[in-house]
Picture 1 (cartoon, rainbow, N blue to C red):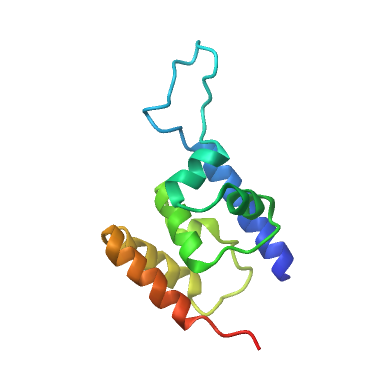
Picture 2: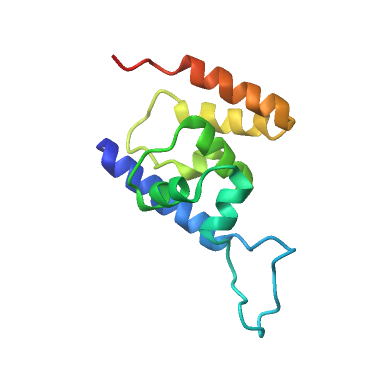
Length: 130
């Protein structure tokens, strides 16, 4: 699978989860009222994750691959494991999906300050472009 195909597959999974997730209760209207919708908008997902609307849109369309912290934030907003947003490998990988799933589970137990620190640490560990 190429990087572009991976980004597109992740984007499809993000869209599936977004369109399967009900809107926040504070915004929900009754089904027979005008304006009722059964899913989150891109704007609501952006607000729930702290990502920009543009970033969420590009991720969903598969125009860019998400960073680890973005996957964690999206999974937390959807109430799913980060591995559920990743493509299924056709062959045995290095266990990255399982590790991301474990990381996502651990991250749900953290407070906002601790989660920011985890993201900061993850960014510091990213390979530097030359």
